[in-house]
Length: 233
Image (spheres, rainbow, N blue to C red):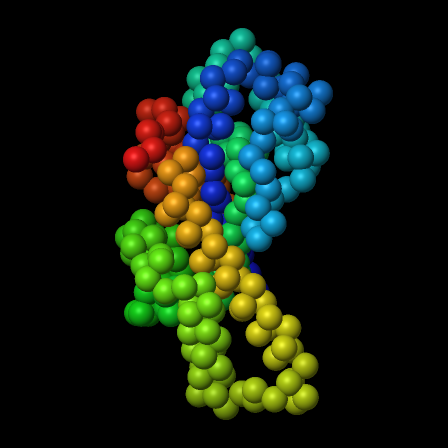
């Protein structure tokens, strides 16, 4: 069903601490598994790579950066790299309790219901004004209410297209229904965490595409490399 939209929850204090270490220290400590105990607790309702996989992602990428001064703090080193945003994204994933990930095609459905208006274009899924509205709407409905609204909207769209809702006639109905319930519930959960936990920031991006486009405003990855980490309100 295409590319995935990602809302990555990032623990800003943990990221700030990690970025103060020298590059060589991050490499050595991560290779030895020494950073695992300080990693955020994984959120079972969200998506997060295992420690060993996240370590490998950073270390494999780090190995390709042959010209970097590894005695520098890692943030300074990343700022000097041609594709430093990619490395920063690896470290943000390390400092994350998890991410909400969803196919773009399904994100339209969820956002239309959550915002009460049509999200017309794929670019709007990632636009900062859209996400400002999403955050503003968070908490106005309970998770159960949002899930029910999404399911009702999904069913009405199928009926309008003349599609069956009989699971015996279409075996995909039940697994699709369950996927919508899980994804909508996880979105509500992620937004609730962002609202209630001031140390967390949400970084929005598109899986498998350039890291330079991840994040909004001062949390855009290029902006972070140019100006440093913003403070959390």
